[in-house]
Length: 149
Image 1 (cartoon, rainbow, N blue to C red):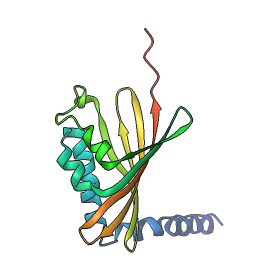
Image 2: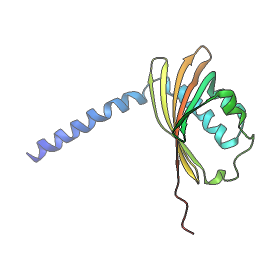
Image 3: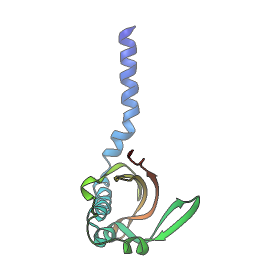
Image 4: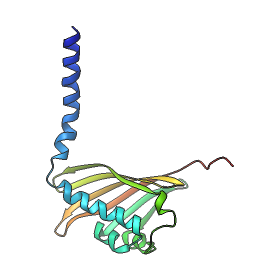
């Protein structure tokens, strides 16, 4: 009986992991990941050129601030790039949490762990004639608790 339960648990684990394993094999993933790496490099360096390589010319960014929907164009967003790394860059961490691709559409979750907040970005990408581009970004900002004085 114990062997049967162990075998069932192993099969269940393999079946649950199958979609993730199949996704990792998508031949488009390196190209999608490269676009997201440009986005991350833009954050790390402040270089607007990195952001330009990631975003489509007509992309939109949306988020909630003070219970209201806020929108920004890619030009407005990229225009805010300082051209240099943030003063606290050494304390900032960023990573791609997940990528999902179906045909010419993809979505990705990115985490930006900064000293004062954790930002979670949800990117929507399309494979355009110019390659993969971020066409839409929504995000959430979770402020971190301030250390006790």
